[in-house]
Length: 518
Image (cartoon, rainbow, N blue to C red):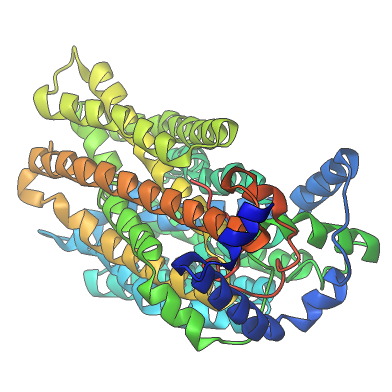
């Protein structure tokens, strides 16, 4: 013990850093959220496994259900362009050259324009009500898209669609960190994210049916827009009625259950809500290398994901399939996407290695892309090329794994809001550029676009490795600081975490109890 005391008294860099951390905690911890504090006051409560599971499923039945249906609606409404691409929209709206690609790009211009104001308002306003309003607005826009018969009109409605849709993923990150533990978040994020695959299955079947509508007063793709838009407006009303804004304001749960639900997420160390804007947290987000890693990852990944989403039907049709066959093959493509997303989440959750899973899930897309580049389509190899294309769909799982890194590793509500804004600005910018990788002059095989994808995969792998190294080093530094502060060996540092600061709205860097997961 004498040796430990001697070490603790030494004025080295670690102890100076520890003193600075304690000072920040004392100052910044005073501005915790009052509503949260009323439910989280007192010593941490030990929740038994049976109670934990009961609460988990109670949350899933309401919160997760709403999130799944909402993301399904967003994916379906956003995917209407892909379905309509082989339903005659290019001919009926007189689209030429790169005009169809620009319809894919303009959506993300709208998202880019909406990211900052949407994220700022998400921190200030009730999350559920704000989400419901945006869902209703974009549903109305999709329905009104049926009246657009020219490139200019389609550009306008696609921009508005992106503007209103820009709140969904940021809102879901907030809801996920608010209701579920960090151990649960990876799989839960994958569940709502894999609605992209479900919409391919349902949307493909719906588009197949609507494609038979050929002799009406409107085009079949216009009918598709009207049906999906009106259904989304109805769902927006449901969101406003049944989705609570937070565990504290959830009238659908008892007071005891609300207190326990809040207690469940204490060890996340990411808090629940705080409506006060804190400038220092915004600055920290802007200067945090990990946040910029997340931005880089989402930008790089969506150069592939965005292009495949807009051009998938055209690519599959180029293998030799008819329009109706391509619509039906969306169902198989959706199933592959669901398997890829849920499989990645379950694997990363089981062995606790998200970054390694991200690397593993890049192998099949690389192989599939290589086959598409090297094999010329014919009647005999159409099935093989289709399988190769399905292999590229495994890369879509990168999106939910990146989002799970953000929701689990960034604390402080203003910092999280700023980081989410930065990430989805990058996401939108990347998706704006992605359709332009596939040039009309390269149709129908788009070989040069797939060559660019191979380069993107290499850069992405390097960024995943860098991200993991950064988080490993940060955990090592936090353990060293904790060990010095309490006078224990570094290997025992994590056993001295009390989680007493969990709801003080501290950032991940200033909270000594926070540990990064990767």
